[in-house]
Structure formats: C-alpha cells, structure tokens
Image (cartoon, rainbow over all chains, first blue to last red):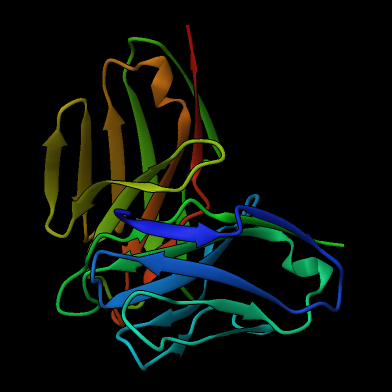
Length: 115
Length: 109
C-alpha cells in the first residue's frame, strides 16, 4: 500500500455501542491526525499525535480516545457512540509538526452513522 | 478566537477564471494551505504560501498578504473537473491547522 488507509469505509452503529476506526499509513510520517467533517463546519481536529507514544487533544476531543503505539497506526475509539457523532471521519498524516508547516495527507474517510 | 472565512458557494463557467477568497484571524501564522476536495473524497493538497506574494502552479495560483490576513486561490481555464470544494487552512503558532468551512465551486458548461 502507499499512503493512508482507513477502515471501515462506512458503518451504521447503534447508540451506546463502542467503535474503533482504524488508520494506517506507510509513509513513515511522524505526525498523525483525526478530523471529523460535518456539512457547513469544515474539518475539526479531534486528536493528534506528533510522534509515536504521544497524543494530544484537538478542538473536539470529548467522547473520543486515541492511541499511538507505533509510527504506522493511529486508531480512534468511540467509547459509547451518540447520534451527534454521526459524521465523516478523516485520518491524516504529515512528515512532522512544528519547525515549518507540512502538507497533510488524508485517508479516504469513514462515513459513520449513529442511530 | 481563531477564524477563517470563505464564501460558501461560487459558480463559474467552463473556460473562465475564478478567484476564491479567504480571510483569517489566527493566533500566530506559520503558513496558509489550499486543498481541493471532490464530493465524497478526501482533501488533496493544492498550494502552500508562507511569504507574501503569488505562487503559480499551472492553472492554479495562490496569493497571500499576511498584513491583511488575506489569501486567494485563482483558477484559470476552468474545466468541469474543477467542480469541487476548496478548503483554506492556516497553520497557527502551535503548528496546528485551522480550517475554513470550504467553498463549493460549481462549474457550468
């Protein structure tokens, strides 16, 4: 593979269920990001990781958690899904945060519907 | 607060020129990005400006004025495949990207 993959492509989930969205990159990028995109609101940062072993909160972190055990994988977990988490979720990566601004590369997205 | 403003929607004719504006107010500035996003797809990188002036890349150009907190994306010789949303994003003092809501560009024959 080349780039970023996300799984699943789409999912319908009952409220209250736990769900993990998967993200894997093979570009050896240090930084990874999770965004949600809602109509009229643009991309909003949920969580980020500047390097393996570290994570940080973005603009809308509540209800979500992440881990970064290695360079390639950055899963996003919804502990107990609610309908307001219905959205399109994009994972992205960049060479490095800081020390200049770096282009972010995006995965194809996961369309999540919580009923 | 941090804010990025872009028009919600624009319409242009195939073969014409269109300018999409972006104004920003952020805590610090470390560069401005433009991304293209076709419906149902992921955003893809178009351009990056960190110094004042015009950056040209084929049919697309991007301009930045840091003193005015202003950028524009200029698309020339419009093609139907240019129908997409165009996202403006600014890197703030913490090197996090702040995104605008995007401008949906509709190209008519």
